Image (cartoon, rainbow, N blue to C red; front, top):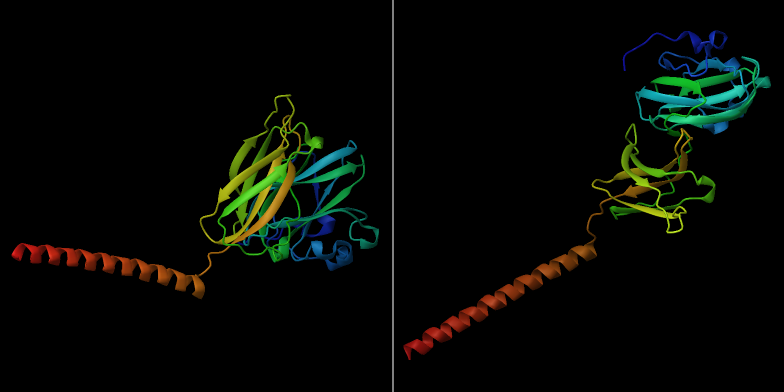
Length: 294
């Protein structure tokens, strides 16, 4: 990424005011932290401050809104992290955290903010996740864009497997009766973005109700750590729902000494059979030649 000047809203006093559905672009490169304006005890392990910047949004109507984050171009794979809070700027004692999200990738995602109050200013703080440097697009909207942001399951607890065939199984809850299709995506841990694998339409029973159980099979072609996600989608711009996500750590194991010995015995056995067959053919040929001479 090219070096860029520090954005003005690196300073909370010059925070950028967002209008509804206004998409802005920015970068965390060159930004610094005003340590007097943050409180690490409030956000805990969710965010590691490194190069943050500030925005402000005040809804005109109370209700649900979405922070859409997209177009990320980052030095590393980690993407940005977002904190949404109320309180007086640079007075951490007055802060109340509404949402804290670390993306962990550069996928286009949205963060849901429920029950925002009309006329109430909300502070948005964006930082590069784990010291990543990112360009990004951001908007506050009544309509979500991308997939729902969610904490990934811990990768450290996943046991490696040498099975390259991955079976995904999920069910459609009754609460999501308007869902009409599922999207299955996959991202290797070192990749910037997820790759689409399949779109599955919701099935119907003979009684006209939705099928409850679904599955998808994927075959891996290279070792790696893969995150699978199943997203349920509904018509009429309804927000998609993340139904399932799981890691798979695929390894190609070297043959063990036992399997090598078994392979060697099989090879030796085949060789012995071939030798015996050739010896038998040679004896038959010899007997045939001897009989003719007599």
